[in-house]
Length: 211
Ligand code: SF4
Image (cartoon, rainbow, N blue to C red; front, side, top):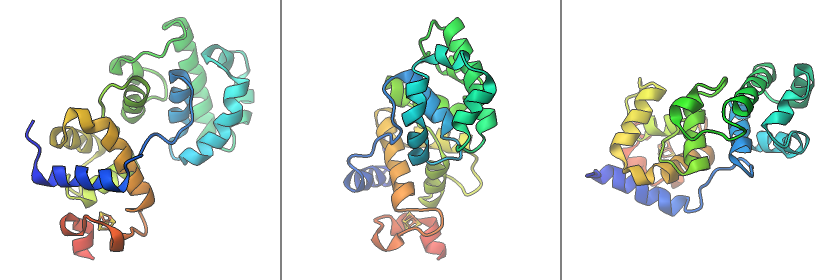
């Protein structure tokens, strides 16, 4: 594909800024990754890691989530936002993984989004991080940064942002860029106080120009 000068500039600068960007959730297999990503909605990765540190010991596989009553799982997750919904979805998803997939998390996108509590973003993260299948997961950081860098319109929804990013950047860069966009949004182009003074994107940033 032909990469625009702007897209190439963004890729080059992010590579300089965050050469080691990677998934910050802790996991040792695709089931744990799926659980961690499901828990991460509206919660920081750091907090998810502090919870899964104990959770993964008590619940070593999908089957173990089915051996406890729902209120016990809720109690184990109560420090996490939306823990009631997340607990219920985890048990339903665990049941499907055990009964339909013989304890193996599927890599297929359709199969992933059919799991309770698994949306487009979660499925993309599991595909890309867990299976190395190119996908551009759009979380709150990726969405915000894409708008500020003028890669999508201000009014774009998450679906439009994902489509635009996949169109503008080469397929083999999606996994890496997804992490670099998140690091950029998390540590430099923050929602409330972006550190514009040290940002290489001032010239192309719609937010900076408005300021
Ligand atoms: S100039 Fe500021 S708002 Fe724009 S991309 Fe850089 S850090 Fe973000």
